[in-house]
Length: 149
Image 1 (cartoon, one colour):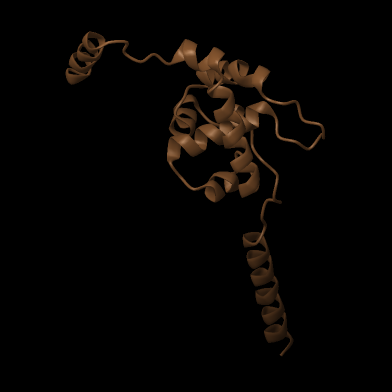
Image 2 (image 1 turned 180 degrees about the vertical axis):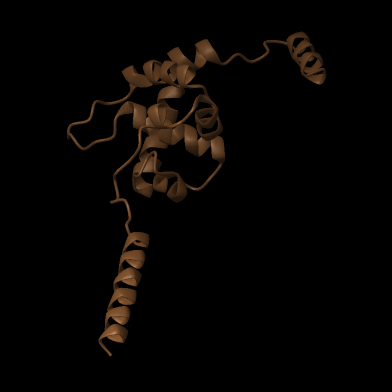
């Protein structure tokens, strides 16, 4: 009898340990730095830009982003990465925020996208990086170039 009891207790302990290990979750807000955690290929797959180009973009928009007043506010890097992931995947805001690389609420994702998009639309950035054809001849030339790509 003692042997059956010991086996039942042992079986119960093993199940409790196994089930307990499965339910361990990362607390909300704990995030991983994608610059360190992701390979270059995985980074491009997630954000659609290289690490170098992403750093350049962060430097480019930083002067147009309001400095946070509280210590828990998102950094410019976080906001840019959230925006790039949203634009790159075409996903909804909630899954973007739930990513282990951002770990923020949907409303924070929305504010980040808005802030970074507004910064990118500043004339000093937009006019230096985006060029539209000025006449019909330039438009035809561009069409011909893209036809062979």
